Image (cartoon, rainbow, N blue to C red; front, side, top):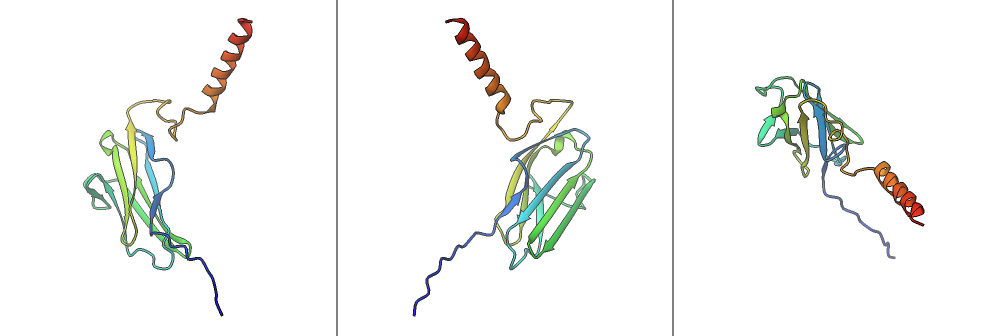
Length: 143
């Protein structure tokens, strides 16, 4: 008697929800959410780092809130940093005790920069449609 099956092994991995580059205005709140895909053995701890420095309640910066929730579907850790300063810009890493870490780059902007506030890294569909429309109009005028 034989039984064939496929075993799919996934590495324990953290993931920070949202884009790889996060843009926030100075004075607003930086909000990052990290999920860990390990359900059978949740991490005993999840730490956050800003560059090489640990970010926690005791950080000299102050205004830090951390919440880690362990459920049947996995572990979620939320980092809130209030009153964002320009010095809060940089790499933030979520490090679970039993999974690969995940990182995101936070950019704190001084003033309003609507173009930089666009997330996702692509220029979007509207400029492409506009360029195509102008090309068609010019082509028709040249006939």
